[in-house]
Length: 168
Figure 1: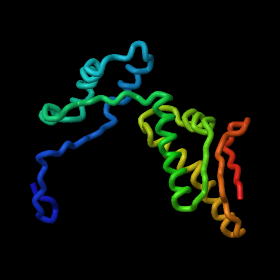
Figure 2 (figure 1 turned 60 degrees about the horizontal axis):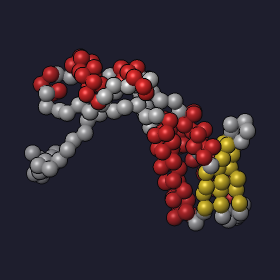
Figure 3 (figure 1 turned 90 degrees about the vertical axis):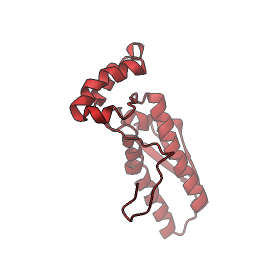
Figure 4 (figure 1 turned 180 degrees about the vertical axis):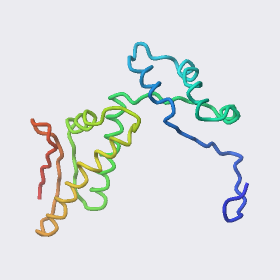
């Protein structure tokens, strides 16, 4: 196979992952009650009629269908922590600032991002829309005031509002 510039590309040891939201409503319904959640093979069998509505049978015969289960609250918390930890590392490495966050913040993010078709994208978007702008604003304000921020603690107050505590 050749790429767009005519360079030979070897696909011998390549795995391609294709994802779709086709059947996501069906998966959500079938997995709503963890006690009644089907095995992966049962879920795949239930999805096939829906997949056949959208993809040719010849294509489905050449791919391996692996249904993704909806993310539970614990998994969403792990994902939120991963993205917050990246932010912690970035603040430390690039600015020498200690950034901490509370478990209440993680729980707040998870509660504000119920599970549906967007998966983890909603969690990431929440962090990008509700934490990063305020963090940037505090950082820029400190720079204009020539104050050196040493630590930033992010948590949630009693009114379920995200709060920042800045230590200069």
